[in-house]
Image 1 (cartoon, helix red, strand yellow):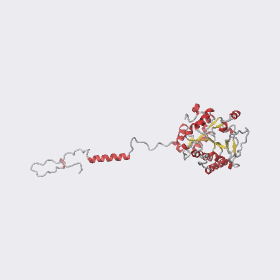
Image 2 (spheres, helix red, strand yellow):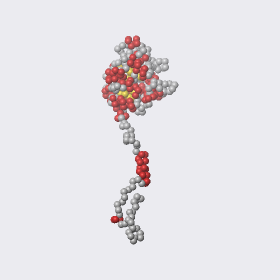
Image 3 (cartoon, one colour):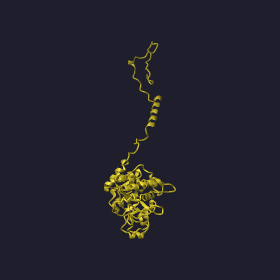
Length: 353
């Protein structure tokens, strides 16, 4: 018998001493359930509390945003994509988000030289990876683990060291895949195609980072060590063939970076390690110093007007170094008509940044 139902009783007939239960067949229809009884209200309240604990408030949302298809894109796939356009040669750069305007500026000049299709960008954070590939599919890849890109902007910082010290590993991986590779920092501008200057069959090609003027017919051998006991070659622009000599140099560079890590006392970057590797593998690696007139350092090109006039028409790649800070670099490029994104952003594969 339900707690909410009781048997219906009819009045006792005259002469009957006790009430008699009516037969089932004669029973009246049951009353509707009373909805506002205390037990019912307690049950409803408990149900609502249970739902509140288990179900999220507001409209249902996916647990996380759908993963970008480029998160699974590998260096092997990306290098094959770029090398197919470059007859087996990859043109490599590496950037995090704040460097995108410089990447775009560099790409305009590379595109004018007809080399943009063979560009591969190592993105150092996932936002940059997705942004580049959204505008220019297949030309960016991230090699895990991603470093802390926000800490990699200030020259001389530990973040900058961590960022640049990944460079020889990327280069070695590409060589191991059987491709040649040219690396460029993105604070560079091409005035002409540099590949006609990659003459002969040397293992490694690079540019000097010294400001003293060399004769036009200077030696292409590794320069002698300077005051610090090592050479002063720029790690900002390197061309390597997939030879055992080039691989040996890169492995030695990686070793040097491990042996001379960043510290507060020695705020290192990757370039000293590269020069120590060059010096310690001298005679084992076939190297070639590119002509200064075509590949000047920023300390020469932007500060020696006489030399610039004397070598006019010979300049190929200009490096905006010997100065730090995004705004200072941009101003210097603008002052020399080399900040192309102001008026020619439509020529960049990335569009307007």
